[in-house]
Length: 273
Image (cartoon, rainbow, N blue to C red):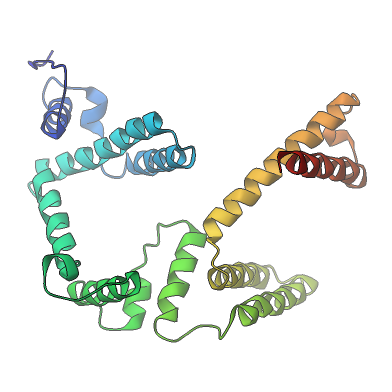
């Protein structure tokens, strides 16, 4: 048992100390065994849960989930402090300096009265401070660990700043048909390697179209997935009401129930309107 005085209210300093105790002699065996790599997925999971709390507009849940995210940050910092590289204070110091440098219109004498001016200055400062000398450098700097749709949209946006983009939303949408035709050809040829490539190109073209139409591709796909689940659930309810197991039906028979489910959802939407 470690020597620690419990309190009614804790601060960031307490969190840092608690993590230190958990990782230290007499602490928790599990916590002491963890590495950056072993808890990497935990960081992703906690971040996603915080995002879900935002989507749910649940303030209490958000407070809890932000605490879990903060714990991940402190934990990773503690691992590096043990390695003699940096501490939590160093992380705070670096982000504060970055914010000041990238907001010269607030902390300096640069004029930026609009969001567009702010973003333009931000990008220029970011390129300079990160040693990015070419537009390609800015594309390569987009984290490969991002969800694929999110990364594709961000890469497309940065390419746009270099002038590499469709002339209009209509051109971007037309590209979807062109990529679909190439996929059809690959499928007809039963060229599996090319099929994978063409599906990727088709998805990328959809992301570009979404960007031009002012749509967040990641959120759009999320909404469509939720819509599919809702419609699937109603379809299963309808088949169960007829004492039928979904998997015993042909796809043609399932489609009839699927269409009924769509009508139910549409009618519910009309009532809500």
